[in-house]
Image (cartoon, rainbow, N blue to C red):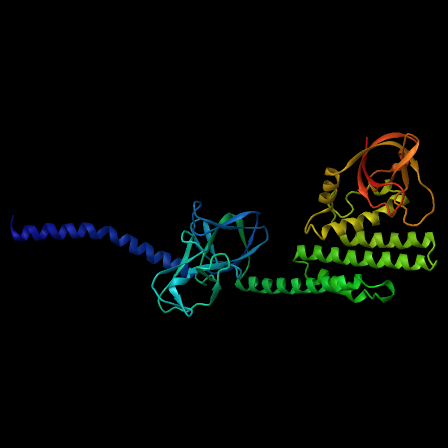
Length: 400
């Protein structure tokens, strides 16, 4: 084979190997241009339990789940996924052996999402980089640091909708901090106020605080609900202390007491009702046209019990409260009779008799017990305070 022919074959071979390489270079340039043209925005999550991943891949490690209405800063896109910046609360971890006096001592030091050698890698540090962190309380071999600004997590595009530019997230985070601070201050002050005697209480300033939250932070529904509950508890406590004070001085007639309770109940219903069947604050009440004056009186008592319960069950609704009551209810059998003695703090409007002897006091806001006077019934009932009377007291959930 001649030298010229050999050179020609070699040249052709190089040409064939080089030709396919041009396409990836063009693709890389196109991808870079697309990334450069992407405009970051604030995205709102449109479903619950949406997975945030380390990579734009359904098989990628799941960082955590985000909830409906959560806001994320979207900074890019890859295929069917948006790239988002991690939240400020996101922590990352570096092996402490590579760090000396907050300076990285080696190249390509992995930043991991968990303080363990097989934790997902979300970035790298180079020799000479300076970092700030603290020893990880879960594993002292690791340093806990804030996730780098270059970190990207990924969420499926179908679960995110654009609600504003990048500044929108910043402003909403600022407002969130403001409403949390306002709620904490109002609740702390309300707790102190509710411990005072009636004559020392001056709740109007606190009422104004809670109402300011309702007016100014309607875009934070959870905070609004907490403010409503705090306001209702404050008003209820003040009312009950006022009634006790006036009764102790014999300055409150039964009629005046009912008027106070009715007014408070109307205000509470207006404040707390959400307009949805079976989900509002008074969902366990009988229809308005079926409510007797006695049942309306006990509505206030039930409201107070529910609000006390929510202090340990944040975010739970009235249906949840009565669901728990039903799960722990007692079955009672006997004859229903009216209990019409005019005494203070009586634990019910009716008594249940069994074998000719009283066995329990009864009241209800969901069942009109007047219809069952003199009848032998089986009741599903939940225990209530008996105010130191002779027999246990119950709230009637249903009659069989």
